[in-house]
Length: 127
Image 1 (tube, rainbow, N blue to C red):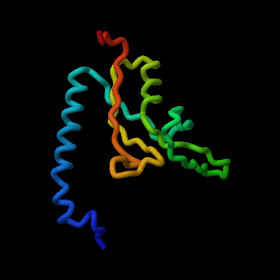
Image 2: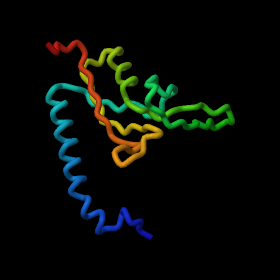
Image 3: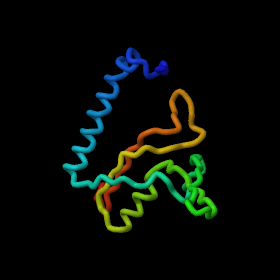
Protein backbone atom coordinates (compact mmCIF):
# COMPACT_ATOMS: atom_id res chain seq x y z
CA UNK A 1 0.00 0.00 0.00
CA UNK A 2 1.30 3.45 -0.90
CA UNK A 3 1.34 5.89 2.00
CA UNK A 4 -0.53 9.13 1.31
CA UNK A 5 2.62 11.28 1.39
CA UNK A 6 4.21 9.18 -1.36
CA UNK A 7 1.16 8.86 -3.56
CA UNK A 8 2.27 9.68 -7.12
CA UNK A 9 -0.09 12.66 -7.44
CA UNK A 10 1.12 14.23 -4.20
CA UNK A 11 4.74 13.54 -5.05
CA UNK A 12 4.35 15.09 -8.50
CA UNK A 13 3.23 18.35 -6.88
CA UNK A 14 6.30 18.35 -4.61
CA UNK A 15 8.79 17.36 -7.33
CA UNK A 16 9.56 20.98 -8.35
CA UNK A 17 10.82 21.66 -4.81
CA UNK A 18 13.28 18.78 -5.14
CA UNK A 19 14.51 20.18 -8.46
CA UNK A 20 15.10 23.62 -6.92
CA UNK A 21 16.94 22.02 -3.99
CA UNK A 22 19.22 20.16 -6.42
CA UNK A 23 20.02 23.40 -8.28
CA UNK A 24 20.82 25.21 -5.03
CA UNK A 25 23.14 22.44 -3.83
CA UNK A 26 24.91 22.32 -7.22
CA UNK A 27 25.43 26.10 -7.09
CA UNK A 28 26.79 25.91 -3.54
CA UNK A 29 29.24 23.17 -4.49
CA UNK A 30 30.32 25.04 -7.62
CA UNK A 31 30.95 28.22 -5.61
CA UNK A 32 33.03 26.49 -2.94
CA UNK A 33 34.98 24.53 -5.55
CA UNK A 34 35.81 27.79 -7.35
CA UNK A 35 37.03 29.19 -4.01
CA UNK A 36 39.29 26.12 -3.48
CA UNK A 37 37.37 24.73 -0.51
CA UNK A 38 37.48 21.00 0.22
CA UNK A 39 34.12 19.30 0.68
CA UNK A 40 34.29 17.02 3.71
CA UNK A 41 31.99 14.36 5.13
CA UNK A 42 32.44 13.98 8.88
CA UNK A 43 30.93 11.16 10.96
CA UNK A 44 27.37 11.60 12.22
CA UNK A 45 27.99 9.31 15.20
CA UNK A 46 29.94 10.97 18.01
CA UNK A 47 31.17 9.93 21.45
CA UNK A 48 30.02 13.21 22.98
CA UNK A 49 26.66 14.88 22.40
CA UNK A 50 28.30 18.31 22.29
CA UNK A 51 28.35 21.19 24.71
CA UNK A 52 25.43 23.30 23.48
CA UNK A 53 23.03 23.34 26.43
CA UNK A 54 20.02 24.26 24.26
CA UNK A 55 20.42 21.29 21.89
CA UNK A 56 19.52 17.70 22.71
CA UNK A 57 21.23 14.93 20.77
CA UNK A 58 19.74 11.58 19.85
CA UNK A 59 21.41 8.83 21.86
CA UNK A 60 22.08 5.38 20.44
CA UNK A 61 24.00 2.27 21.35
CA UNK A 62 26.78 0.60 19.36
CA UNK A 63 26.60 -3.13 19.97
CA UNK A 64 29.82 -5.08 19.62
CA UNK A 65 29.97 -8.48 17.89
CA UNK A 66 31.53 -10.43 20.77
CA UNK A 67 29.27 -9.36 23.62
CA UNK A 68 31.37 -6.49 24.96
CA UNK A 69 29.56 -3.72 26.78
CA UNK A 70 27.77 -1.53 24.21
CA UNK A 71 29.19 1.92 23.55
CA UNK A 72 26.91 4.94 23.89
CA UNK A 73 27.06 7.22 20.85
CA UNK A 74 25.14 10.32 19.78
CA UNK A 75 23.98 11.61 16.41
CA UNK A 76 25.64 14.97 15.83
CA UNK A 77 23.62 18.15 16.16
CA UNK A 78 26.16 19.93 13.94
CA UNK A 79 29.36 18.95 12.11
CA UNK A 80 31.18 21.85 13.82
CA UNK A 81 33.39 19.93 16.25
CA UNK A 82 34.62 17.39 13.68
CA UNK A 83 35.27 20.13 11.14
CA UNK A 84 37.26 22.18 13.65
CA UNK A 85 39.44 19.13 14.26
CA UNK A 86 40.21 19.18 10.53
CA UNK A 87 41.18 22.86 10.82
CA UNK A 88 43.59 21.98 13.62
CA UNK A 89 44.98 19.16 11.46
CA UNK A 90 45.85 21.69 8.75
CA UNK A 91 42.86 21.95 6.43
CA UNK A 92 42.45 25.66 5.61
CA UNK A 93 39.23 25.81 3.59
CA UNK A 94 36.47 23.29 4.09
CA UNK A 95 32.72 22.97 3.91
CA UNK A 96 30.09 20.33 4.46
CA UNK A 97 26.44 19.84 3.63
CA UNK A 98 25.37 17.42 6.35
CA UNK A 99 22.30 15.78 7.77
CA UNK A 100 22.10 16.77 11.43
CA UNK A 101 19.80 15.59 14.20
CA UNK A 102 18.24 17.44 17.12
CA UNK A 103 16.03 15.67 19.60
CA UNK A 104 13.04 17.58 20.96
CA UNK A 105 12.77 19.92 17.98
CA UNK A 106 9.55 19.01 16.26
CA UNK A 107 7.09 21.66 15.14
CA UNK A 108 5.68 23.17 11.98
CA UNK A 109 9.02 25.03 11.61
CA UNK A 110 11.45 22.44 12.98
CA UNK A 111 12.19 18.83 12.12
CA UNK A 112 14.49 16.54 14.14
CA UNK A 113 16.53 15.72 11.01
CA UNK A 114 17.54 18.41 8.56
CA UNK A 115 20.37 19.50 6.28
CA UNK A 116 22.91 22.05 7.45
CA UNK A 117 25.75 23.69 5.61
CA UNK A 118 28.82 24.68 7.58
CA UNK A 119 32.09 26.12 6.29
CA UNK A 120 35.38 27.36 7.69
CA UNK A 121 38.31 29.27 6.28
CA UNK A 122 41.46 29.55 8.39
CA UNK A 123 43.54 32.71 8.48
CA UNK A 124 40.93 34.76 6.63
CA UNK A 125 41.17 38.54 6.62
CA UNK A 126 37.55 39.55 7.09
CA UNK A 127 38.23 43.27 7.58
